[in-house]
Every structure is written in structure tokens, then in C-alpha cells.
Length: 60
Image (cartoon, rainbow, N blue to C red; front, top):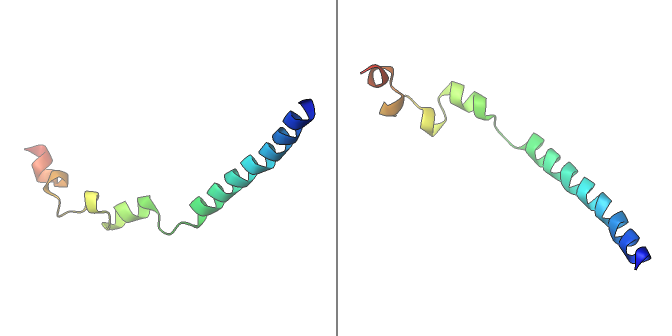
């Protein structure tokens, strides 16, 4: 039983490291930057055509 648990733990560690590396690579290589999209006006929730984001609407 002890050897079985040791084997499972030794398989588990590289598996977790692989998943962490895979998620890091996918996030780093994803296209676009949310901050750049918001600043350039391409983000649909922050566009000037949305009256909720209009300065005049917010001041009224």
C-alpha cells in the first residue's frame, strides 16, 4: 500500500506542474489585452455608444 501511494504521489507532482505550465502558456499567448481594448474603445461594455458610460448621464 505504501509503494502504491508513493507511486501515485510521484505521478501527481509532474501532472500538476504540467497543468500549471500549460495554463501559463495559454494565458500568455492569448490574443488581445483587456486594458488595451478598453482604452481603444473596442470593448463593448466601455464603448461611448453605451449611455451608461456617458459622462453627461453620470452627472445628471
